Image (cartoon, rainbow, N blue to C red):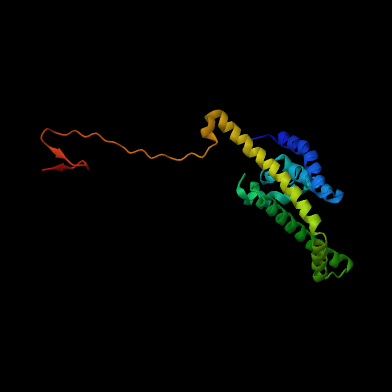
Length: 203
């Protein structure tokens, strides 16, 4: 498995390629910036290794505690953390839930201290309109996060496959099926005694 430094170098080396291809396909500076920014953030801080005490986890600094429930709920390198699309989606939903809880706490404190009245319906409407108005931008950001996460997961899988190839050859990377061998038992047969196909004595 590649080290944290190797993952960082892969992200930084691939960043110009991701930005160049995105701009070539979209001809949009804003979309390119979102995809490239999401790719770098996904590769350095929002990747699959948030499920362990990793370099990505440490980069969250004093906020890294928010990922402790995430770590305790998932097994390292499980499909839910390292799987394509599902891993990034789960992290986005998890972080959004944490942010929503913190926002509710802050609003409750503001209401008590400064007598500010906030309608949750207004907040939900504002968030919904923002997501609808900036759907393309949100999709571009998610794509960047997913590409950054997949660069990490693919390098993990590629490194593991290379190690198995060096140890076992092609058998280490190809799916191996178990071949059942028929056991042949030798039995001593006395003279004059007939034995059938099942190995039973016959008269």
